[in-house]
Length: 245
Image (cartoon, rainbow, N blue to C red):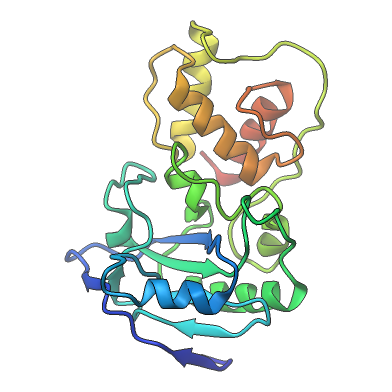
């Protein structure tokens, strides 16, 4: 590592499945008042949760689990057809109060540390840009972190992940809960093609609404409502084009 990292070993890990690669990077917020409280929780044997790293508000990085081990950060989740995300991923918890804490901004010094840590991780492992994901991307019905105010565009400019400028929000036709038909199937197909865990059923159900909301949090944060408006659909197409999908 080219920057200092403290060690606070967590007992909450196990061996990764073999020979699975480490090819997903998951970013979280802690959703707690302090980084210290989050680290205590992630290191408590009774919590049964952990992450590989925690980045506090001052940009200090703490390693809890070695990268070669399987930390317990993703929970029930999926990405690009992978159900055991923990077995294939590295998890970074970013100290932030989250939605319940008023959506506080991520300080610049913290983002600098996140960028540096992520760059080193993706340099060590075969992690494609589209597999740098939010917790909400892999568990859209349960999670909303690291939140729509996290600066994914900045991270992409640093060479981590993928970003396109979102299509502007405008009035027009949209797809929403209860809708059915080929346009819904096409939307579901495109979301699944990018990596989201969604079936092509042709019905805009609660799962589809949650996945659209997760997509918006990450890629079209101006309006997060789970409705696939013109902006959402256009942004998804731009993203798939850039990803070569």
